[in-house]
Image (cartoon, rainbow, N blue to C red; front, side, top):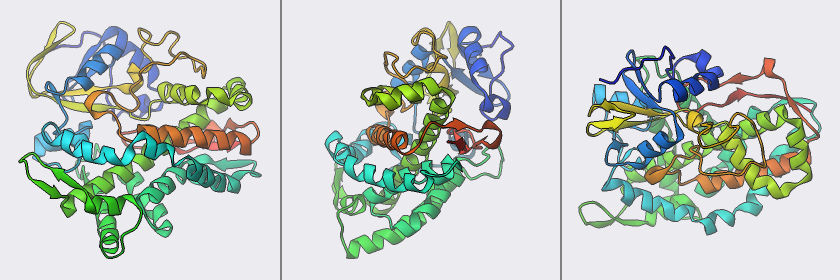
Length: 402
């Protein structure tokens, strides 16, 4: 068993660390690059190179038992099984089959063609706060844009989008340290919504992703070519909608916070939109929405001279790796003109986020519209609060003053 000799302590459930993690994450990188938490029985890596290794070595660090600590533990300790089609929690041979199918829906050409519609949607949302001196950015803006974009793609009725987002948000940010928490309750709850929509699409096809999935064919791991089963379609739809709605909303919140805390760079970006794409990369590097990811160790593996035994839980920390000084000089500084490289906010390797290009488009367009719609802004920290849960880190409420 590997031992942590430093007195640094980390667990993803600690709310004080969650509120301000970067000092602890720096100590992990420097003092305990392979960290072991005895209470929760997990190993963790925090340096850039180690996170890249774990996320890329799919035969050693498996995804099939869950992509976060709470879900993985439910699989290992309680025998919970993953729904088929939840490809972020799959290994070969199923993972490349299911991922390849969904990737057809998110080609660069398809995503880039959405920009005019995304811009119109952002303009409509921002109109409600253009002349408001103080507002909650999360409830008035950030939570609305991604679910409406996803709704447009999937063909979700606009009247249902807010309630469906609430389902995703509640389940992604619940307190999973509670033993009564159902790890995949959100999938079950949202699948019930999509089941109704699929009945309508079967009778009345439309130009949307739901209709496309009803008619798509795959060659599964047995070699059979077939259309998707209904349970597979429901899992796909839930995954696409929940991931796209939550993580992009959290990222937009961090964009407002980072630019609000750095008025000089807010002004610089307002005056020079040519650096917008680079600014988006800096925002997601500086504040990674993904608070942690988890993998199951398939066989004994050596890391930093210590043996991690087969059957262990390995946690990777994107917020730590994204600020590793070994990769990003002056890593704690926010700099929209920084020379960018690979960061881990959208994952890495075989499980790199399929929706990354769509999320980047939404952020780029939304920030552009925000800079046009609002004068300079700042954040009222006392009236802002972070989300609960351990999967993603972002704002529940973000008070903006213009």
